[in-house]
Image (cartoon, rainbow, N blue to C red; front, side):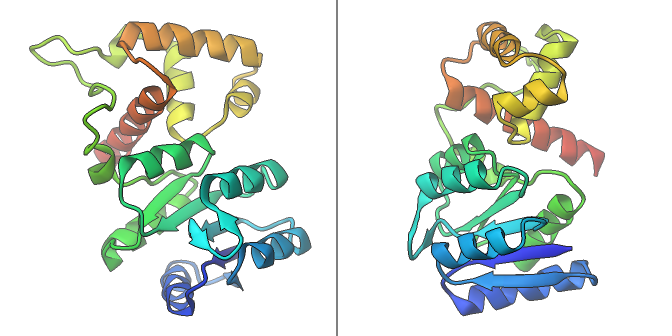
Length: 219
């Protein structure tokens, strides 16, 4: 398995590498201290299995950089490791298709759990940060106040919601479900109306919560 760690602080790279190697013995780790180095390494190794990237490093313009990575290397899963601990950075990263977001303040145990999930092909997002948003989506489970529930959705809408929460783009959701992109957008529109979600960010927020709650119940 090939993993690229892109961060301009060598201490951070070394720490992440040690955690990864404890979890995955057969691991080839590549390092990059700048965005240009990361791009060069990805071009030299198109079969890279995972990219860990900081949002702040030389040459990397946060979400513009993420967009470029997803556009040029769409098959490489990305996990953000960042000092930013606000819901906006998490949700905007999810909108760019990342499969995980790890705050740099996370404990060693939290980092290990996050890596275990992404190495197993799952997603990992910081629920404590996502729940801080006062403008976020409603909870997935209904309560006495009658909050909107996933039970309102059709099976296909639930499929779309699940993949959205895993960081999939509309195009990839369409491919995985054998639908057209237009049909996926129709499902998203219907879903937003049923759940009372005002915009795309609120929908992604809701979807990430649903996926994380499902993973938590499985553990």
